[in-house]
Image 1 (tube, helix red, strand yellow):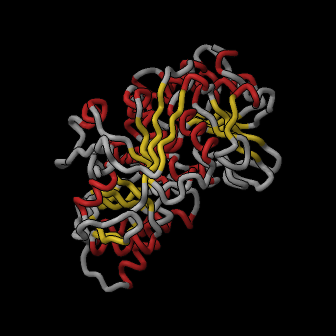
Image 2 (cartoon, one colour):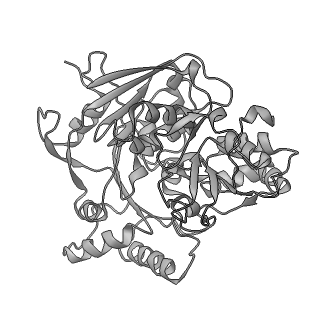
Length: 420
């Protein structure tokens, strides 16, 4: 019996021979990271453990991105803990304001997470890097403390569900719509502690930006991670980026999957996930007429350059509805700079949007776009739980950048076709 890409990666990182699905193994970690919320706790337990040194100062990332630029004294103190730890242990990859970005976009962009690796981050959306063919998992801060010291992690070997996407994508449909539709089919618990392996002709033709979006939201189906086999698109993306050698793995044709799910994309329209779960995704026309107060375009899900290009295409020579706040947040400094070079920022500002420096900000209800009681937002972020973006009686609708931009113009949720 052959092996999945996940089983091959785990085999290469553990001394446990002939492990089975469900076995607990100890695996070597290639890269570990944390942010301004999760790192301070990990640092506390790292120091309490008596560890004298980190496992590898070149394979650790500290990225203040959730409440930065520091929104208040408490967030400033949190970030200071990261900075001092990075200095004390001479950690190479500490990203201060002006050089930073949202962690799950920044690390692939900088070539710090790579195919065939085990990547551990103290954040649930670490699975984003599975788009590169890495086994990328989120852990708690105490687990990360052990990884910082030992460079190893204990985990239970997960089974894999294979998703095969066939057909031709409709206009304005991308990775966000594919993953929202998929979650709507299997539910937010449909892949609990399993790997979601995305494959098929549609995935092979998806850009890296769209692949990152899909893997980013695997966790919203309860998955341990999402993963896509590396191909020429992956290798082209990595050329000139990767900061160390890497190994490419592919699933065997006779690999054992828990389940194989076939999805014909020709029937998928732009999706909108209604409150308060990502599984509540419906075609955009079923959301038509829902008035919004705010539109957010950004986050580790949809803050990349392709997302901003799509938003600019919709917004060019148009104005944001006077009742709507449109907030656009490039995910990294490099994305921001590229958007400046391409004239996208001018389009956004001319339309009446506000453009922010990179931050997670509103995605977790941190700042830069918190909702008041009764307000509704459409957002390209990944979660719409009760109170996720502010008041418990506010509502968040998840969508792709085209839908978010078009809705900002009309003042209610619409199909992008209506304004383009």
